[in-house]
Image 1 (spheres, rainbow, N blue to C red):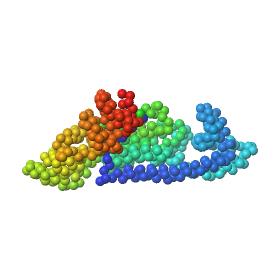
Image 2 (image 1 turned 60 degrees about the horizontal axis):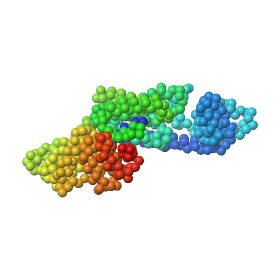
Image 3 (image 1 turned 90 degrees about the vertical axis):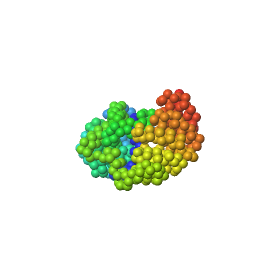
Image 4 (image 1 turned 135 degrees about the horizontal axis):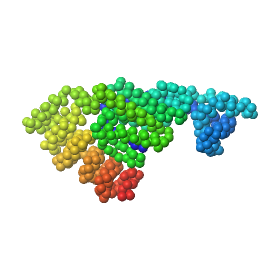
Length: 491
């Protein structure tokens, strides 16, 4: 099992990802609307079934039929029948079309049976209570004699099997969707999303044809978004949270490297025989999404992340004016008004590292000023998506700590964030110092456990075993079941 979730990017509320939100809402409406209504009606019908004469007359014959065609399943069904577990047996019987066909043709319970009239009455009542099929109608059918229903290549992507299935998919849809939507524009994004669903369903239909069951879920289309995301960012280094089986950590890596990792994971899970998850649909989505984004890039239909940021920044024509004013005032050694101009420029482009660096360097000439503290905080809160930004944050931290008057004004969340980032940069001394300050000043801060875990894990990997073990008493208090805590106990 391998997951990788991007952490640094945030949706732009200047140009909100409305289509991604709409797709999420449609999936939720379908699941909590017709799908939930269908499930409730089936539950009522199943309750009636277990109270009728039908289990006595049908289920033993169903188990005997299973024992003839599949000894393993028949043995399991026999145990469920002896335990009077009628609900799962009924569900299994409803999925066996061959047996149901014989049952409805009155070849299982025949007119010669003394209880035929009772069976006929209860069977008719049960079937009248069953809802019109919705999920089955719009899902992909992997049965041997399934009829061709091309529309299910798309409609299956808007159905889900459970609340957990839905919510997990919607989380990944939002995490990857908003970046892709901003880059492609809404119409192209929707087209690619639906084509990704088709590609995912097509490969799954080929891989699982004749194996029985149904294919449903948005994960294939979402995998297409993941493939698009990796190709769109290519070699740009993105910070990800990842989990590999029982190990998890953070990594900053070129986005494109994740594509082969995702593909390898889906192939491995498929070959290991994972049940209940259509790994080939995920693979089909990844390949389709990667191919679509590659074509869009060739045709120049993609706004790269850098282009999007630049366009958003250029919305305000006063930025260059503020920068020119700041430089002119600084050259005239009028540092206080220069800081005011830099502050105005930073408000227009809060993520522009050059602007923040210039503001910080000007404000440090007046280390007791609010501008110095504000500029430092802005730098510390930048997304550290590349080594240059991380280096700027560390250098600014050293300067700020040394020169700020009357002293540094760091909030606990800023210290926690910097400690984690300095660990990534292998600046273990500063990371350790920040952790110690946090333990004294904010011992119950919600980010403290994660911060200590990251720092201790970094020290362990760097061979600093004794320093890492120094965090163990605190981790035992804050996160006793954390993997890093257990690793330190074994160290």
